[in-house]
Image (cartoon, rainbow, N blue to C red; front, side, top):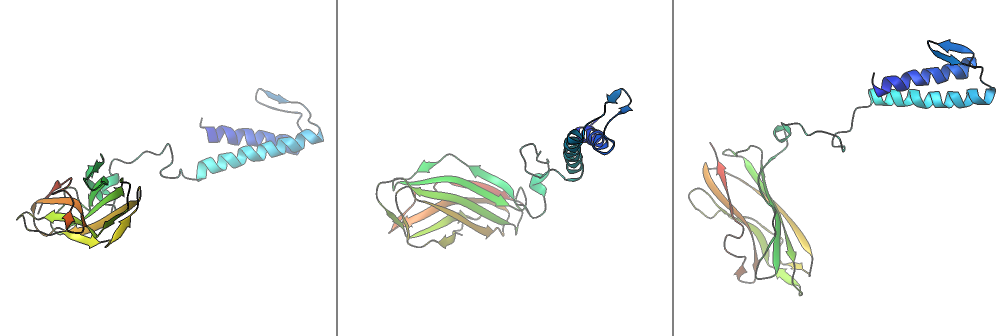
Length: 205
């Protein structure tokens, strides 16, 4: 017997006490006469039990709650991108710029030709002085090793100490084979370390 059913039975008993005032027997339960004040309290308790039973029975569990289970096909849900690469350990460049939380996502895993790949990462100034990043972009090489860098934006971004900038950009992969990606920035004529935290993605036809 489930908890909602037990609560419904208890609520019905308390409601019956409130209505008839006791002096009845339900199977092995012998209820003596109840004064008026007790009947009022019994009615309130019964109403609470009944309400709980109704809510527990008809209100669905909220997805994502502490006890919610993630379905095994969650990554295949239509409209949700698959994570195809994650690089969590942070690394700091000689410029005092910390790179963290690199994530790549695609509508298929592995990605297919003409899929869009989204890349997200963050940059933080861990030095003691403000730093001006003239541009932030994502280095990219297609399977023929051609330069297909993308996402040039955030021009002249001033990062004060401890400040973090979040980056997200995407590219449509038009060739099958091994693609290479890495986050990058420029400070004046200085580029981030060559192929900084680069990773490869196999794109299938």
